[in-house]
Length: 135
Image (tube, rainbow, N blue to C red):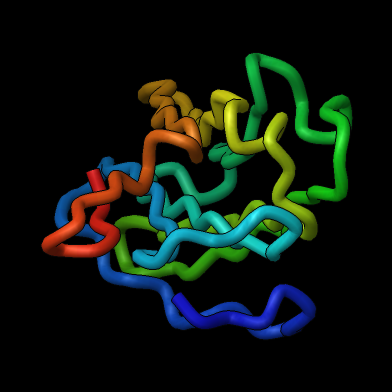
């Protein structure tokens, strides 16, 4: 995921494997402290006008967290009977506190509420033979 955080055009949305679906993605390579990291959340809904996608950190809204981070706008693509939603979370300066924050992408529509959780410090595991890998 090599998207500049300042870019006004997000990357193309990946096709959902099934609808409903919720996926969170992150860079495969570990980001150093003070580096910029973009997390992406993609969801699929059959309710195009009644679906919401947003980020939380430790159960609070992102704007209540310390540090330089922000949510991008929700992008929607209508695909016949369902709608694909995409929303980035940009951490402009990765700090030890943010590395240990429990981030959640939350998707809700009239049919469901789904969350995916991740802690950045647990994303990359060091293995001397393989370097860094996702868990």
